[in-house]
Image 1 (cartoon, rainbow, N blue to C red):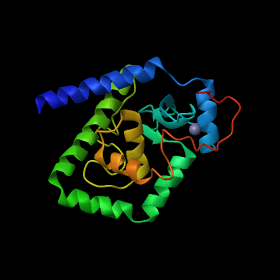
Image 2: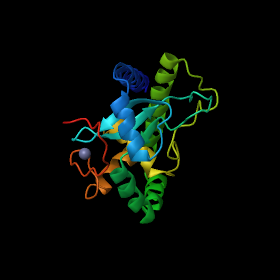
Image 3: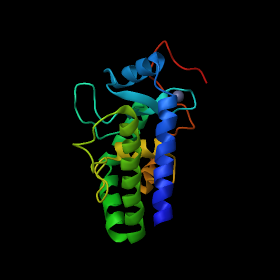
Length: 197
Ligand SMILES: [Zn+2]
């Protein structure tokens, strides 16, 4: 358990350092603004990109400039991914995953570790950005650590941290594969400052 905790902390630190070394530039912010239809407040970095270079999910700082605590550190921005996951949610997949969690002790343990990874990552960002975590210190996202409440947030964690961290995010990624995959560009958002692959 101790080794695993150390690995979680180290992975969180490396990811936070990587995000801060590759901060979002004006083109990234414009791309996400076009995807969301609003300015992405507190955006630190693009955490995952489509093969075409467009952002899929972004990393947001723990405390926005106006003092608003922001627990959803890993935020899904790709309209195609959002839509695909919304179809999943509409089809009762969350209920299915909640039942899986109730029945599978090992899955519950892995999901709890995904929660710990999420908090560790945000903590590493908070330290480096000087952001207070006062109001969100044990709050992650998506219903973690014991429920599934938002597959968008869980998929964002899988896209940013990679497969093998959040088992429900991983299941979601596989479930939406016909509609969304980071390896297959289905992007439709238009903006001038697109990164070219
Ligand atoms: Zn694309």
